[in-house]
Length: 179
Image 1 (spheres, rainbow, N blue to C red):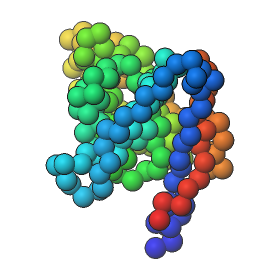
Image 2 (cartoon, rainbow, N blue to C red):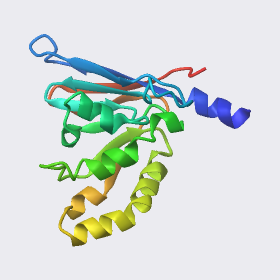
Image 3 (tube, rainbow, N blue to C red):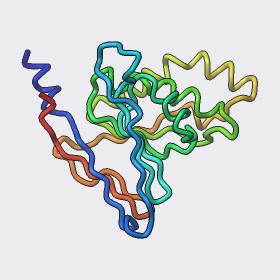
Image 4 (tube, rainbow, N blue to C red):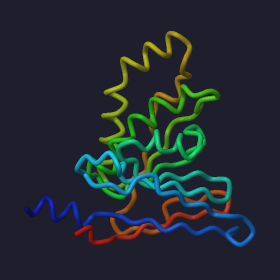
């Protein structure tokens, strides 16, 4: 039980601040509010926030890419993915975001960037490895550019703090008790 307790206590929450909040709309869309148990009526945990020209995805649960598509948010426009913790229902959508966004014209042409707790780099390397044969085929066929076969990760410190700042949008992480 102790390893699970450690994992639960290392859950992160993110708060978004924007210096242009009054001048520009901030749009928050719940893409999925489900649980780890399969439920066709509730996709996996995922929220998209559009603010200050940024499209930020918080958690990438099961079906995140499909739900973004349904919400008419182009996958290529996702600036950053923030993973709150390493439970499967918060990250099983990462492979789909990684593999699909470069294919939808005009596809993503830069590496996918993910912020998360320690261990997120292992998740990213696993996704890259899992899809390496796919990437080689698509690179050979000219469907991908080499840059999109990489995932850039950013470890969020366990004590939180500001983890992202771009164009007036600031994302701050802080610890929460998952239980």
